[in-house]
Amino acid sequence: MSPVVFALMPNRQRHTQCILRKVQALGLVRHYREDAEIQRIMRRSACLPLLPPDTVQDAWLEILEDRPDIPLLNNFTDYQVTMKLWMLFTMILCVSLWLVTRQGILIEYYGFSMFPISHGYVPEANRVDDTLVKLDIQCVGAGPHEAEDLFCMERPQYLPDFKNPCWYAKEDGKLSLKCIPYYHILGVCKSGTTDLAYRIRAHEDVLGCNDCREEKECFYWCRRRYGYEWSMKKMTPCNFRCFQHKFANASQNIEQTTTETGYHNMITGDATPSDFSDFRGWPKIPQNAGLEKPVVMTPHLMRHVYTDPKFILIFRNPTERLYSDYTMLDGRSAVAFHEAVRRDIQTEETCMKNHTVEHCLYSLEIARTLRTRIFLGCYSVYMREWLKVFPREQFLILRTEDHDQDPKSQLRKVYNYLKLNYTEDWLSFIANVPHQRVSEKKIKQGPMLEKTRVLLDDFYSRYKQDLADILQDKRFLWLT
Image (cartoon, rainbow, N blue to C red; front, side):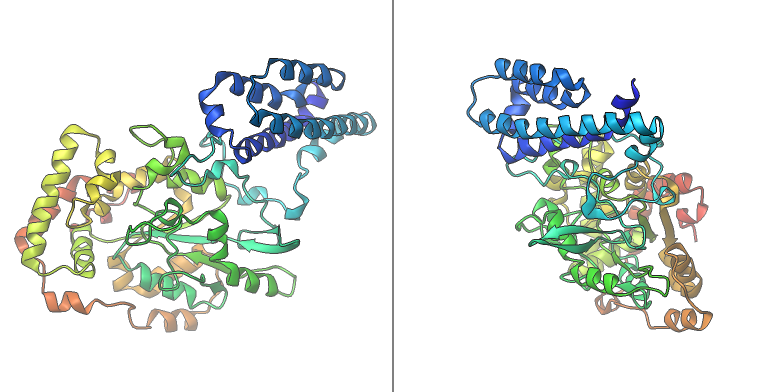
């Protein structure tokens, strides 16, 4: 490959993404999916930046001659004329610079951002190792009743002088700072996430989110981007811009607060405990359209957006977790819980005889037939999905039992993981704050029946063993 072509590779990627966005904007996505001729035109157009400058004109005329007679294509070809002039200018500029600086231009050009709005870059030390997992997921555009296609959006260029992932974007004619969470408490429900989130937010450098349930849960990744409320009732879908808005107040505070060196060290986070395991919206992801099983789920979407995510998980004995969850969701009694568990185990096991475990746990239709959220306790199934996409080092994994017994040591792990400064006096103070959200309903309802515990321990046994194997930690067998 010639040096000039190599130098132009970032431009070709930008050019291709511009084409895909224009296809979306013009309503050509369905035509692109169904018409092989339109696919050929788009792909040939995307290759124009790789041609020698003196051949681009002829190649473009050849593409025009072969196009099918579809009115919407006229707008696309008008757009391409403007893009072609931009390409020619860029090619001439790159050739000139290469002649002056020889090989030096390759390094400088390849590191140059095509989006000056960002005013920043992603430091190499803060990137997820992209050599471990190649997503190779393409933008296809969202069809009717599908969620926004995040793969049609470029990953933001995060600012190096901000600890939190933030970038500048033009809004209403002016630049404004946009930020998304530095950390996510991914799960799991009824395992102490509310208490842990409170103790993290108590730190002076940590900000909450606005328009969030209990100041911690925005439900974007697991439900709202698919048009579901936290209770799974239908609502207007929340797109990525809507997600950013939930951290608008935090963004303002992050921008206005700096250290003596000018570094913006404040952070914000999201503690939606359903994000870890609620994949029920997968059929609405455009890349999964028409498929019997998903190829893209929450981990893939978050991998596309984040460079150095901080994921926190707190696992609880799944048997105890389910009883607490049932009580929270207005469960009637220990006797009624036993009957619900017996029926739900039967439903899941019957499904698993005819389908994969993943199918039965990720299905919205099956979940709607259950009386409990028994599927949430099959931790290892979800953990494997996340570890297919992110390395183990991206996760801080705790146990509820350890958090309850020694909150100070667990909080020290969390603060260190999030790179938060603290004194021992402060750590002792915040660790001794009374536990948040103690369920009075569970106290009134009484303990779980022993026969119910036996049923659940047996059902969850293989998932606990699998989780202990994955994490190489026998504590996750919950033997004591």
